[in-house]
Image (cartoon, rainbow, N blue to C red; front, side, top):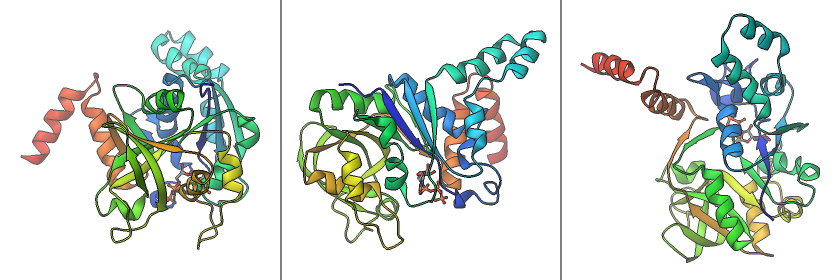
Length: 288
Ligand code: UTP
């Protein structure tokens, strides 16, 4: 069975963007003219996902509004003849069928995903964290779904990380390499640091899970901060079934931190047809 459902966990506090995120969800911070979560939903839709559950929390109503119809705004844009913008606004509610599920307490990414168990209803499910923008020739989640269809097993996205990255991401131990990009995973460790890292292959926020992930999350012990980490749940899953890692093709911008956010914004703006050459001139002027 292919993955037609996706979970987007978006319940976190977004502390790295305070004070911007005090009253506004981090996922609504715009990169050029679209909020972060729109890039995520568009990637999911372009990957063949038709049902999306967004995991939210208090103060995140803007996420629901963003993907809902807005008849007054649409009427206004229609009356003003702003057909391009009207299309953009209408497109949002048709990207997929959206469901919004509350995570009552911030108990970690694994716990946030567990909130989507009923939504998944025994089907495979993709998970996309909205912190990352992927700019890939084939949408990143599609790359994973294609491996999932071949292997009929959980697939997680991998990227090469430096020493600092071993402190920020889950790291995998490879059982065997099956091709340039495909690995069978032996073990995982959450943010092990350079001394304890199994490899330089980090888990970067895109997953396609078999339905057994939910049972694995429930059997996963909480970490020292009282949270359930999805990296630890993958380790639990590995005891029962194979898990594959795929070194994705393309570029990823980690927009969950300020520098990565700036990098992503500039990189995408430099490719934006409306103002890429003007922006290039402006940057050159600033640097000269
Ligand atoms: P992060 O670790 O980036 O946390 O979570 P955060 O709260 O968004 O941001 P910082 O670190 O405080 O700045 C990765 C993803 O998992 C979601 C977040 O919303 C984010 O999309 N998440 C995390 C949840 O939905 N629930 C949680 O309990 C934890």
